[in-house]
View 1 (spheres, rainbow, N blue to C red):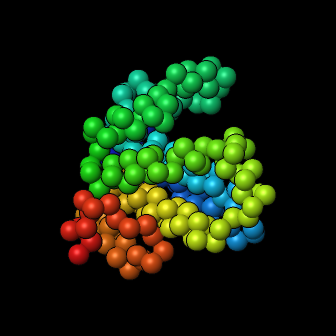
View 2: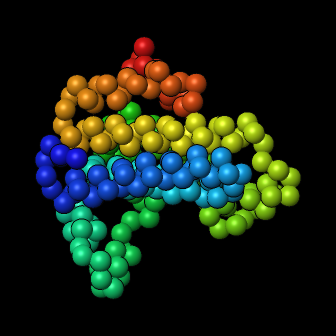
Length: 193
């Protein structure tokens, strides 16, 4: 992929977007093989990859970018542990990124992140679902959410490429897939029409 501006910051954001897209494929595959609890854990990872991409593009400092851009060594790994948590990254992104992105990230954080955290740590949610079953409507909803996160990652990729026509095309593709994506936050309704 050719970036509009070649920089370590954009390369890292590109990598985080690719992680988000990879995770979305795994979410769908996990549901397809009847592994819904695993799908939920990976959905949380997918969100954090998109959040990391957003933070890298809109809020990370040069020192933070440098820490993540280092060659992978034990020292670099240790230095990267001092980077902001998901909550801290979201706070910074909410103050710096476009509303079309922040609305999705904030909504996911408010309604999904905490419950999905339970799946990452084998908490009450997955233990109950293993015993009681996983509702089909819930699975469809989670796939829609994953698709929405993936769409946002593709929008960021288009932005990183710097082609306005491609950005517009990817942004408006959402209209063709409203049946398998989450509803747009109220602030984006006009952009969809």
